[in-house]
Length: 234
Length: 224
Image 1 (cartoon, rainbow over the protein chains, first blue to last red):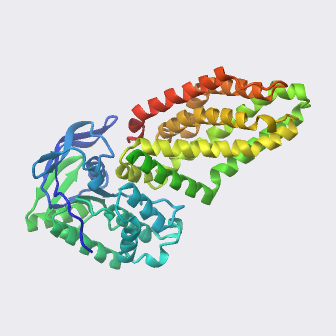
Image 2 (cartoon, chains in turn orange, green):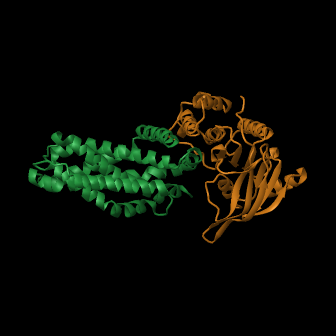
Image 3 (cartoon, rainbow over the protein chains, first blue to last red):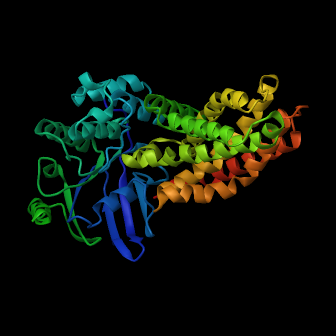
């Protein structure tokens, strides 16, 4: 499948803080993500990974600080339509079939041939035979495949993945690793939260560890990345 | 154009999911039917009494049924975080509201039209001669319920005690709609039926004001 043209985008987090009442989910997080980086965020439960990804997706507003997308010629005002997001929840309608779910979001995203794109993704993800089945009849792993397919619909410039391997079987994980590797090689920017080292996290070009809402480690060097990812799982 | 296109796609989704599950329509039709039938037994609905109490009873049951119908409107989107997926996909967030309030108005209107013949028989009122005018009142009144109802459904879905929150916020606000709709319906069910332009104008004004407010501030209601 030929990928549509896209604008490589970087992301700049400047002194991001997120508070829920007196609780700090993020404390003065500053990161410069370069276009084409695949960043793995590691950290214990509640360390702020999900909040950071939701701020990047512009689903959550930071309490203070700023987040911006940057192209080669400076800040991009609103690339929301070029951002794919896989969350903890599957973001799919139980009362719609897998195909209907993908068609719905493909149409909203203004994809030229939604039916063809949905069919291609369902085929890639091994869901073709169940495309007419309601999502509520799917296993957790199959729902996760639908969630990933939705995020990939318009081949986004920026992909945000919150523990994307959740529920996937080994075959699904291999497919996801292959797809993420291809997207990284094409120059797309990928941010994902992970728990420990896995087939997916080894694709990362950079690892960042969060602890209690703060960045405590950040490296692009292989051995350091290994330490960051494994320490997170310890 | 993007707003219209997204709204059409989302309205299709709302209709498809509802007609597949029939959760909202079944609940509201049964609820209104029970209220209308129960009240017909509590007093003898002779023609004069029906003209006095009928319209108010009808709209009160529509209002309570609407608060039942509106509750799951945004709550459904919380289950699998589909609201986030919609926010990431639509070009104009107002389309999410527009599709939901169109669907809510349509479902409410459908429920009302299904109940009207039962009401006419039980309460001995003639609706055939004024059916089209009645439809106009039902449409404006239902829209007046659905616009703020959809907005408050978005607010209450993210709140604690959400089941209590919606009726608590909504019912006092809808008092003017209830009065205007009851008066306009009452005038149509009278021995000399009249389409009251003043109450219709009031309902149309209410709809325009709240729709504009939703267009201006709706996006903030969707934020986490």
